Amino acid sequence: MIEYVKLVTAFIVSIGGSSVVIIALSKWFGNFLSTRLLDAYNNKHEKELEVIKTKYASELENTKNELEKAKSQFLRYSEKQFELYNDLWKVLLYTKRQADLLWQKADPNQIPSFSEQIRLTRNAISDNLLLIEEEHYEKLIQLIEQFEQFQFGKLKLVDIRIQIEGGEQVQQIISKADAQNTINKNRRTKEKYDKLIMDIGKSFREQIKG
Image 1 (tube, rainbow, N blue to C red):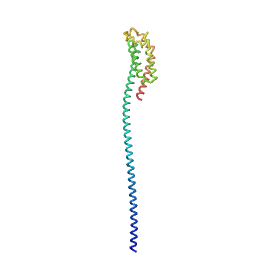
Image 2 (cartoon, one colour):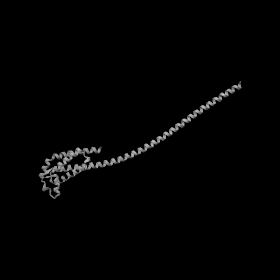
Image 3 (cartoon, rainbow, N blue to C red):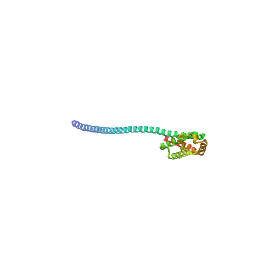
């Protein structure tokens, strides 16, 4: 009887031990397989992430280079644009100063230089048409034409320069009375010009600031 009990006990222990082994093996294999699958997924995911990072890093670098080029071009354009605005403004302002001198003294000797300055101003306006707003451009041209039509005795301002270049003296073709009379009649034109270039100067500042 005792031997039988030992045999049964050994049999049960034997079966129980195998089950434990099988369960342990199954658990280990499951963990191993899960770990391998997870590692494979992580490796694949990391590779994909690396490819994406490399791609976007390259695109980012290209974008930065393009932005630097655009910035450089913009700065060069801005500098050139400023120079153009500044040069045109100087011409317009110098014309105002020439007119101020003529209106202050009514000196016939100043009329030829004023005539020449009006010519230079017309050329500068035409050369820089794209910088000037259409409304300002039209008003400028009108005022320049009015200046050119100033009548000094029998001569218009636009013709005086030709007479001077032909060798005639200012005193021979324009008297101080003629100069004074013309200036008095056309004071309104000068006032309009003074106001207009102030408006243009404001417009230039706004365009330069962007």
